[in-house]
Length: 455
Image (cartoon, rainbow, N blue to C red; front, side, top):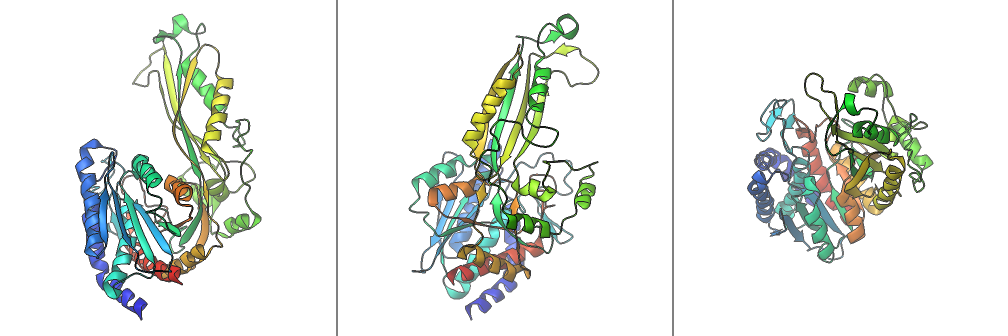
């Protein structure tokens, strides 16, 4: 039986897969840093060459920045077509001091592989390449038609991919997409993610006088931009956790009763979560559990503040300018453009006299909600159960993956979000890791997905 051959291949070549992954991780493909542009290209070439080695026609699609790797196998007429998306670029490794081993020298400890990109997204993306390899090397083909689209700008906004997808919808046509760039719910509890939050990210600059002023001479006579900024930011959210922008909740899609039941069934301890984070109390919108707030309710958070003097010792100054970065995580059916309009109206309304404000929009993406009753989602659940030995739970996550909305918009298909990582993998942080056992389970689940989709 073909599947038996595939399983044997996966077992025999598992150690080699890990060594290949290490070689890919050693390439410091930090897309945000121009000093690593050549490295980022080397990572693209690595992926292209690996796809070619398994017998696929793989090419680099040149862009204004980092290339997109594209490959396809369309030898299964009448069968569905699956688009595999991933990214080979990684976040900067700085700060380096907290790393227990060099960030671009993958190191095995306690069954985990530690390195930048181990889980986000080189390790998870690589599972789908090895899954295809197992089928191609044992049977000479794939159970379904497969297209690979692996980009190098996910960590810097993905503008080139957006342009490419706008121009190449016919080439990318498919029945489903799959992305492995999320997490399991907990160790031993794999998950299929059916919902992601959207994002609306802003920068607010508040300006007062044309220069810094002595607080004794001018305090009480002119507005302090830092005071004004604090007042404006405080107006965004009330003590009950509700966002106080007029109209903000008008289009929010309520949680279905079955969803609240699923959230309640998940093994989660509010007290354990609090103790793990070492916070004196949990906080959020009243009327919802922590899991519901995290995965399915809108949020507002300030990410950075600047202005005035923050060096050692006192300096009595009224700063001439102050600023903050803040964002809203959105849920279906909130649209980033409408949230921007509402945010601008709110900022204009609460701006105190004596200062000028500039609100800059940095990024926006709609939320994603996938129907869990489609044949593709059911096939994905069967594949995950086969690979991990446990029935997956269906979850919504608080993170955003803008390409999922882009795939829906440009190609009109749903994305199967199958995450092999864990919540403590420290993606984007020091000592990022990926469980080697989960890597192998992910390869098996990805290989099984191709079979399940064919049925």
